[in-house]
Structures are given as C-alpha cells and as structure tokens.
Image (cartoon, rainbow, N blue to C red):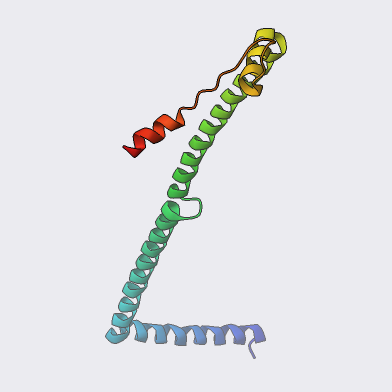
Length: 142
C-alpha cells in the first residue's frame, strides 16, 4: 500500500491534469477566444475613457476650481487694489502727522488754522464774507 501522502499527490496531479485539459479546451474554442479579445479591447477602451474623463475633470478643477487659475487672478487683482489702498492711507497718515507736527511747533500755522476753520480774528479786524451763490443763480435763470 502506498504512503498516504503519495495518494494525495497523485490526486493533485490528476486534478491538475483535468484543469489543464479544461483550460486547453477553452483556449482552443474560437468563440471564447473572440469573447476574451473583445473583453480585453473593451476594458482598454473603458480605461482610456476613464483616464480622459479624469484628465478633463482635473483640468477643469485647475482652471475653474476653488483655488484655480481664475480664483488666483481675482485674488491677485484684489491684492493689487489693497496694496494701492494701503499706500494711499500711509501717504495720508504721513501728511496728517506732518500737519500735526507743524501745528504743534509753528505758531503761524496755529493762527492760520484758527482763522480758516474757526473764523477767529485779531482785535480790530473785520471779516467780510462774499456769497458767490446769487451770481450762479442769476446765470442759471437766464
């Protein structure tokens, strides 16, 4: 009586031979070969279409997405505008600081500001105010 492991090996060999025969029959069947070729071609076409769709989606996202090129351009323009505003405000701030410094240190500047804004006068001075509006109204009526 052969060893039990040899019987198992013999059975495995028989099973392998049966599988090999079935595979050979399948491979030699022209309908199955055609179907396999068709499935392979379709799989490639589907994969190609999926790759193209993915590329189109990514391209669209890069251009029009939340952080795409169009959003980048808008943010760049907004940054330019904000930089201009910052520069204007810094210039205005500098002018105002110079004006405050001038008012704190120059008595003539204080007097000029008091006369212009508050209509102050020195003793004995008289201020005459001229109205330009009646002349403008008269010309509009003609």
